[in-house]
Structure formats: structure tokens, C-alpha cells
Image 1: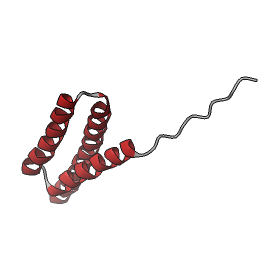
Image 2 (image 1 turned 90 degrees about the vertical axis):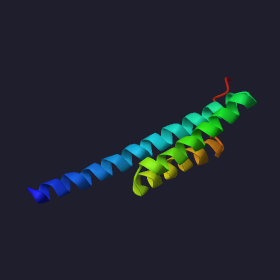
Image 3 (image 1 turned 60 degrees about the horizontal axis):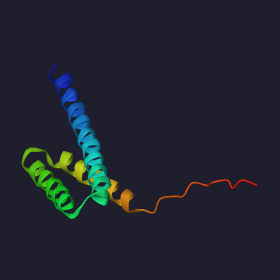
Length: 93
């Protein structure tokens, strides 16, 4: 029974890390998409809220989960700064 509980514990850690990765990506994407369209007051609120969540999670999440959150949020921010590919539009003849 002890081995079964250890396997479930490892699976739980993996699922938690993946959940934090999804959360980090979603929060990063939301922050950057809303940041580009907002006025300066809302931009400040978005930045403060994002970093408050980041700092707040360091107290309550395991280091592996926090790392997954940070990596996914960083990936979302890098994706938002990357140049978007322009769709090939066909010109009418």
C-alpha cells in the first residue's frame, strides 16, 4: 500500500506542476494582451497584479510548481513580443 501511495504522490506533483504551467501561461497571455490595449492606469494595475501573484505564489507553492509557473509566464511574454506572421492574402485578379 505504501508504494501505491508514493506513486499517487508523484502523479499529484506532476499534475500540480502542469497546472501551474497552464496557469502561468494563461496569466502571462492575459496580462500582455490586455496591457497592449489599456490606458496607463490599467497597465500599472496589470503589472502590479502580475508581480503580486508571482510573489504571492512563492510563499504557498512548491519550488517546482513555482518554476513551472515562471517558465510558462515567460514563454507567454516572449510569444507576445515575437513578431506575428502575416497571413498570406491572395490579391484578386
